[in-house]
Amino acid sequence: MSSDRPTHDTTRSEGSPRRERSAPWYVAGAFALTVAGIVASILLSVPAFFVGIDTLVGFTLSIVLGEAGYALVAVAFVVLTGRGLSSFGLGLPPSWGLVALVTVGVFVFRTAVVVGAVVVGVEPSPPSITGVDLPLETMLAVLVPASLLVVGPAEELLFRGTVQPYLRERFSPNAAIVGAGVLFAAIHVFALIVASPASAAVSLGVILVVGLAMGWLYERTGSVLAPMVAHGGYNALIFGSAYFLTRLV
Image (cartoon, rainbow, N blue to C red):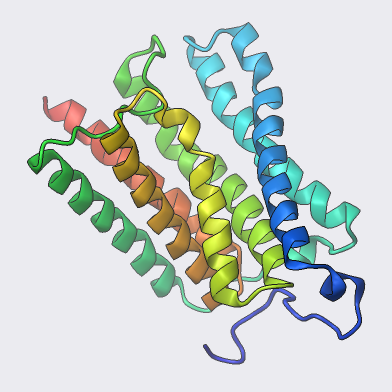
């Protein structure tokens, strides 16, 4: 990796309190950040259920407020620990072409896995929007812009902008990427509870690969904006293609 890559601070000074902390401390800290993100997401989305999750306003609020929980935990952590907002790596990525390549690459990978799973008789996991009494086209029309503007940015701010550099203070870059990727996949388990074991395993496998790709992109570019755009674009491609298919049927 090129020496001019990182814009986020991954240095650790000898004898600093952070360096002296044990590996289990950092693992526990990363896990705690993930749990805090989930709890904040649930609590902040409560008002949407009072509005009515089966209404357009309530459905939109549930996405926006729920994802805001992840961003809130990320910002609170870097501010309260003195790391500062600059620790996210807010500079522009050196190559938007690389961002586009990762975005399209993970979408093609997911499509290939889903098609392959169907061929061998494993039905794709039901989407997390199942059970909401709104027209599918309406929900997909909301999810496309929400993916770009809310979901991708909020989740990447926590997992790549916060958890990954936190782990990077103690572990190698690759270990930090894997750790953040596993925790990122873990938050999606709740949406797969109703799926069959085989279907859930396929979905979690894809999500883990996506998380690893986003982690690599962050480490490679040093900019959290890169995985934010790639993650949002990946989700938008999924929901956008589903919307297009609903128009054809």
